[in-house]
Amino acid sequence: MPQSSTCVKCGSADIVLGARVLEQLGHDIRLRVDADPGALLLKGPALCPLEARVCGQCGYTEFYATDPAALLAAWRRSQESSKG
Ligand SMILES: [Zn+2]
View (tube, rainbow, N blue to C red):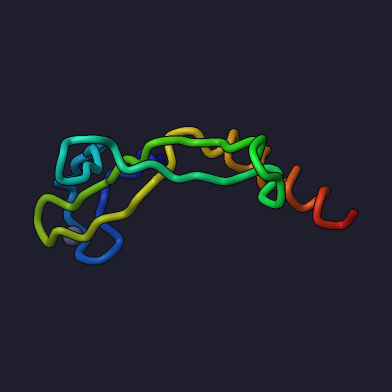
């Protein structure tokens, strides 16, 4: 997550970092990328929660994956397997 200190929309410096993104039951919403989406069982999923960066003035919100490297690795594997 970028640590820049101002809102890109309104220029405010009042930024909330690391806000959690929860579903109604309190579980973290997670992103999922399957390394092998065509597999019946072992799809090689990479899962990671989202965090939000929220402007405390205008409310503009950006979402960030907490482990983008894991998602990228799974996605690259899926691209290789889709080429055959
Ligand atoms: Zn703002």
